[in-house]
Length: 121
Ligand SMILES: [Zn+2]
Image (cartoon, rainbow, N blue to C red; front, side, top):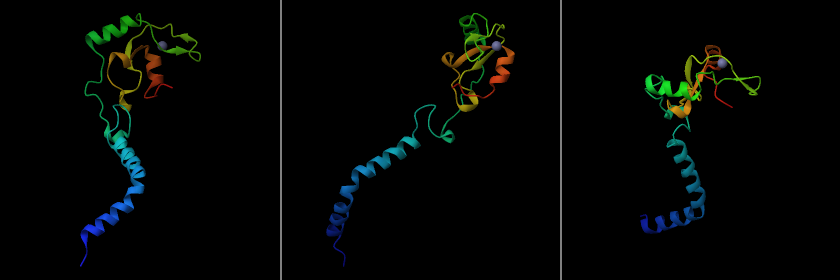
């Protein structure tokens, strides 16, 4: 016959010294399973259903950029002189970048094609 109270007390005494380590492990697992928005494993993230900048947001982004391309030329020392024709995500939508004004930039066609799904450094 097993004395359950004694068995539980023994198990608890064995686990007690490991509690800080166990809490750290469970904390790490929790942080991975419930990531901050835009961080953590990609299989837990969702793309915005609204991916395109249209209408008033697009007009605001173009006005903010002065209708000029915001792409950098020559290692970021200058700004592209072309007229902006496209509004694009700074952090790509395909990599779960949000479709917000803060994540938007006005680009010329060439800069947008070259950028593709590259993440900003
Ligand atoms: Zn450009």
